Length: 283
Image (cartoon, rainbow, N blue to C red; front, side, top):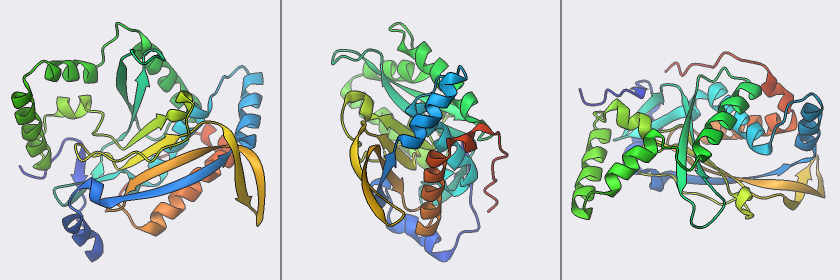
């Protein structure tokens, strides 16, 4: 039946504005909002150093990834998506990540999709993240995304266009096969990219019209930055976090409280060490 999906349930009790907005801004690219967070690294460095003394090796990526999972668990409206003017609450938390198998121009890129319940602590997130990345760094490894992409890449251009348009039609009407949604990195709660590993600052990355991604978070390289905090401006080692989000899934106040919560995790990463019960999207 149209509107029934394997990856989410339709939200029926929306306010009038959020009932109208998806029909005015029909595509995800119509609804981009942008935000930059300058993240001081002193607290994170101290936390990572402390954990290393305890025999636990953490990276900035581990902490930020765990904070993003926690944010989606505690702010479930961020885990919504829009399809064909309808608003859906997503089943589960998924985060996609693109990696290079080797740091060279010739090396292939692959995209990974991680599944979470939202209850995980930072150590569980780190273990899953590190294990899956290590497995997929193998030059011979192929995940489900790679297999589907390889299959599509061998068909003629005219047929490829037909297939993509047909898949978008199925997605629009809630008929996309579950195995395609599972393999697709574009059907995800959020995309995260660490462009700092490439030696550049954070970028504003667009959201994709194909799929259901509502948030794109980019991590930049370490640098000296001016930080405004407690009515003072000072220079400090930091990284820029660049957010791009779909403004149709929640209001500005909700986004603001979510970004403040994320920053709080960065200032007190030990908050991520406890398992939690994810909040439900009750509407």
